[in-house]
Image 1 (cartoon, rainbow, N blue to C red):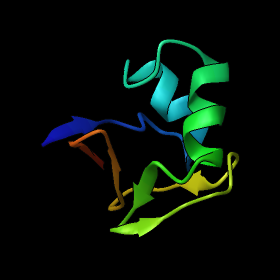
Image 2: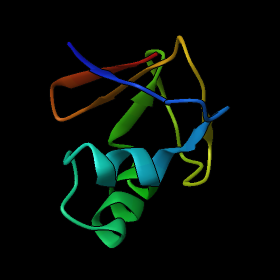
Image 3: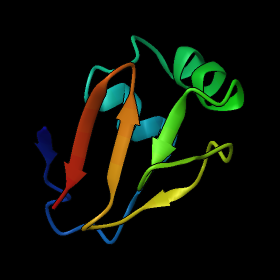
Length: 69
């Protein structure tokens, strides 16, 4: 499991997280992955591209998991 630090931010939007962590190569790829139901947040499929991801949550995509601190 990888860890992503919010560094003083309250949240990060789901598509932005996928892009900055390298799980998706671009914002467009991230939006497509979310729209197709390929991304999970805390084990549940998340279809909202701008979903606010906060500390303590876990995001999954293509077998990789990222915990938000």
